[in-house]
Length: 381
Image (cartoon, rainbow, N blue to C red):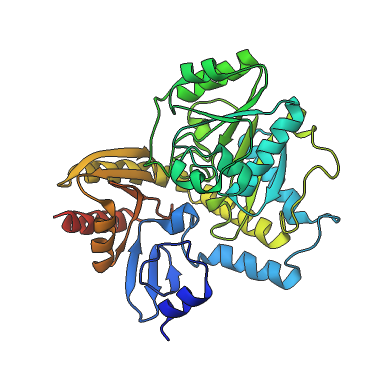
């Protein structure tokens, strides 16, 4: 029985998998079980922020594993406190709650917003994606994901993304918060007008509702700042992140201003594995690696160059993005091009019917990006 047949028999069929059995990775290169190498421009969907088998992160993981991997949150651990302190320094948000994923981070944010405001209404955006657990799914504005699981949690409404006036009209006396991605990832790398978040922040202040920024995909250096909202010089009330935080080790984080965070009382929320020492040490090492190696600057520079090269390709209609979060809208079905690229040993991703998504490791070199875009150009021909 082949590995494909075994997977079909033994694992629930929720993923459209490419026919690769991945054996290992190094930097921006993945290797299959036959030793073939593939240039990865997806970075495990933005989770591999500092490259596969990063020696510093791997060493920190091994060292921490030799000490202790996990312990209950009934005790203190240094890596968790140190990570919270580091995130506080980066964001200027006061307190953290650690989970295992972006969906869990958003669940935490929704619960915290309702507890703090004593209101039920959560506004999100059409096309927004916040996760697949029931609360995060209720905030998600993509019928493809939500329709099979209705009825969802009550109190959620959806407005057009990038339209601040629509937010103003939607707010009621029972609105607790507005949750939004700075850039919509799953909908095709949709970038709003530069002042959109500034307008949103102002409206939330005027109407006395909380602003929750979902930076699960846009965070951790991807757009040229550590978090995307920092391009706008604003501060959310609640921030969520995950994906690239620990270079592939599962971890999520919800950060909040002190006056909001203090609304959680003992027993209000918990996560068995959340904030475990192994994940926190991996995250702390990843952040330090990003900062000391100027990877945010690398993301900004290489992102601009990549977008320029992509715009020159035949059959590319539009290129959108910021830093190394890039979408290329093409003339045909993106699935076909993903498959053709894979045949040419290049990994790209489809995030809308005709949009190719690129979220490579922040350590990717200029030459590797050029090589990947050249291969993509051949596939498009």
